Image: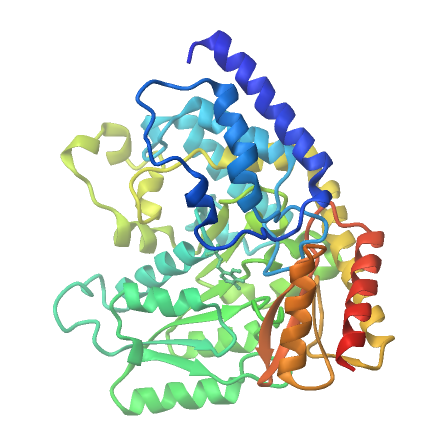
Length: 470
Ligand code: PLP
């Protein structure tokens, strides 16, 4: 593709995306296609000769678009949000345009230095502990996902407790990991990948608000010590996936210090809320965390993928993940004057993700981002009020931020039928969870496109649909 063709096609694609956003609420929120329908429409024949860009775009519209679920729709309330925004899309486009691999400083200095700078900006903007700032012994790095951040933290914690010997046979056998029964599934996955043995993952009970029970935690640790276990790593969650519950970080931090346990805090979705002074309470106790992560790609208007991962002692991470093959050796890296982010993550290669974050932070500014968070919280408070105004429904958990967990009073089957019915209309999309062993609907507001009338209309439709089940 020469630059003339690229210019034309590129402008068409930008127009296409702008048109897509203008009409996004006209699409059924979740794709209505059946399994294999998209593949059945794709030709088996691989093009021998290249095709025109117009022809490719036509198939994008005819074949691919019907199989897209519209995560950016104002009526998307499922899972947690995966925010996209104009500046982030354009930043990512430029990142693709540069086409660089930022594995080591010298492979593209801007990639490394902008990333370090953005991570430091986040420390300041979110009022995170100073030990996560690059001017301290720690620092931040962008990972693809919270799952990768947790895995990296666990690997560093594993090496720390075994003095870097955990790859020697038998050494990591009795290392114990703790998290609550509300923690994200990525913790179980990380334990499996780290080879600690799933039987060494302790699932701690939660209280009525779905936060980790401290007494159960401490008793479990004591039992482990009695039985020859080595408490190693704990994941506390700030904003659980099921209900945005917050584990008591202050008490957990004290226990981790007492028993020499690495404390990792997972704030994948909720972490962004700390932009706003009134939600800064979510950081209370974070000063005892060894590592922390949250996803700007969830609620900070930065397109997937972008997880911000911070560590108190960067050496613990780099000593765990650094491998120095001959072909990457260079004097600057060896002199320790630059950061090589390859040593802060699992893969070697890495994208220029900080560019989209930079664009977002500059375009919206702190005030713009705060307004986005406050709007989401306010709309979820409105939704809560609407639920409470209808005595056929009940709330299932506190809603400190942008997620409302609710259900119809009645059986699980009724609630499952209700959500299926709502999702099948294509008018909205909700997901579910189980809280106190009851099937529960989750209504999470995070899209910058969601306005008051979307929430009111969606509630009206939910209440109408409920008539069928009374
Ligand atoms: N942790 C929590 C609390 C989450 O809610 C999620 C996803 O929703 C994750 C971790 C995993 O996020 P990622 O997809 O970035 O791995």
